[in-house]
Structures are given as structure tokens and as C-alpha cells.
Length: 165
Picture (spheres, rainbow, N blue to C red):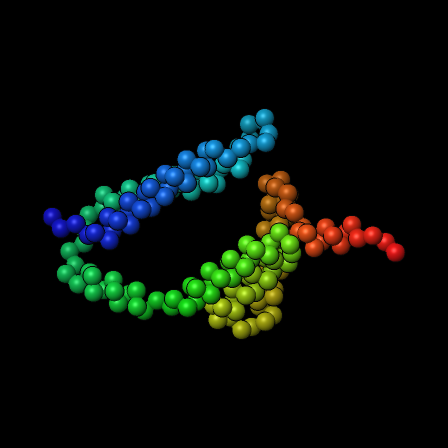
């Protein structure tokens, strides 16, 4: 039996990552003494369980008998658009940095439009329409359905509390 080293290392990596993520997820503090169906732990715990299940399935799944598996993998890696991935990573990093200052609405709106542009969308009205609908819908979902407060940001708070002349 031939062992696919890439598959085994990848499966082990995601299994360990999912277990560590799950361990941290169950230690997220809950601020309410009331037991709720959904809490701050729900999504991270679910993601870690899914990660453990899928990485275990990856580790125990049978091997495909492909003689050119390594060559195909290298060709596939070379064919990927790494510049787009790098630009999206930079956009996510900038989004994380400006989120606290600009707030959810403005930062998410800018992030979505930059991401659309990076991925090749050039229809401005489509970009603006989709980003506004997504930002408002996500804010409504978090704020009113899940009762998660989203801080409007330092810029908005300082504008509200600006001294009058």
C-alpha cells in the first residue's frame, strides 16, 4: 500500500488545527447566565467539529491509483492565480486594521468593493449594490436576529460626541 504523503500531512495538519481551534472555542467566555441555543461558542465549536470530521475522513479515505499524482499536483499549483490570493490577503489584513476605526458599515463596504475589484468585477453599480445589500443584511442579521452588538467605530462615535460650537 502506497501512502500519499501530501494527503496524510494535510489531513493531520487540519486535524490538529481543528482540535486546537475546538479547545479554544469551548473556552470562550459566556456573558449570560441564561442557557441559550446559540452563543459565542456555537459557530466556532461547530466549525471545529466539522474540521475534525472532514480531516479524519481525509485520513481514512482510500487512495486513488494515480501514477501522475505528483505531476498533476505541481501543475495544479502552478496554474493557480497566486497574485489574486495575495491581494485578497492584503485586503483582509487592511480590513482588520481599519475595522475598529471606520466601523462595520464603512470598513465592510470598502472591503467588499476592493475584493470585487481584485477578483475582476468592473461593473460599479453591481459592486455597490451587492456590497450595500450584504452589509445591511449582515448587520440586520447580527444585530436584530442574533442580538450581537456591532460597534459603529471610532470615527462614527467621535462624530456623535463632537463638541458643539
